[in-house]
Length: 97
Image (cartoon, rainbow, N blue to C red; front, top):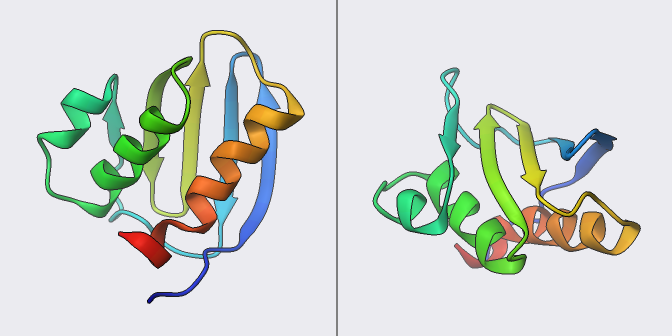
């Protein structure tokens, strides 16, 4: 079992939420995905996290991960509940990957 990823900050900007963590999730180059199917074709931690995020919420339309920042776009905008769900998926990622 791994360690929890701490969420340093979470901020909603338009239809995206920007989550900053205490752990690097990708290298210096970012990874972006438009669907769980697209992400599932790649073998990386970023792709696995993107797949988990897409599966957690049908309204998510794009996931971009660069180092310790995760940017998630959502068709229906963000509520406190939807932000909490993605924060939980991210914070538990290294516990279950």
